[in-house]
Image 1: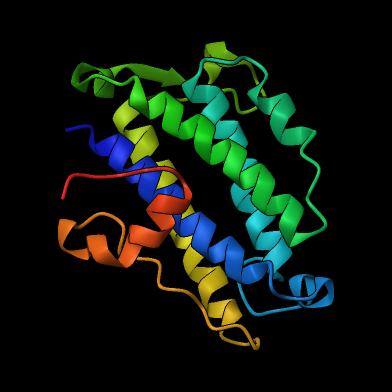
Image 2: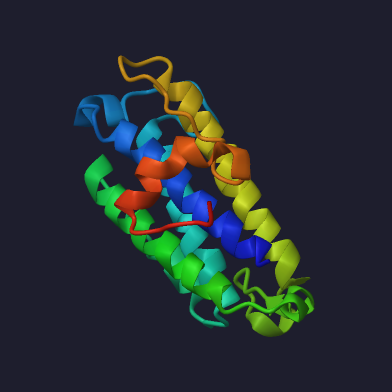
Length: 181
């Protein structure tokens, strides 16, 4: 069982639900000041995507991760952000599909602006755990921000447990996914 793939798929499903709810807001509500670590839904969700781009580049061993971070252009609409997040989620899923258990210890090297030679190094399993935690953390903030709008925050935590399969069937079908019954 590839737990990273399960987490990557759950991540995509949660992002799809959350961004679907956010997409029903007006552009003004998307950018409106809100209480959170980042001051709006737009800022929070763009932060998630920018971090995804950086970490996924590192996972793929792409040496331009710092440049990707520095040239990130925030999406100005929820629809544009959702398309970009979906592309990022698909890239992460494709990466996780190819993983083997022994890959968890493979060292991932980061460039924090001083080059790869001096950058931090972490085992792949920990990098993925951090990336999924980062997404979950900020999705929770967006979920709370939605509570201050006319949009009901969607359910986001029923994507891993087998007993919750009925609650995600529609989302899975929309993505062309299936799972054992």
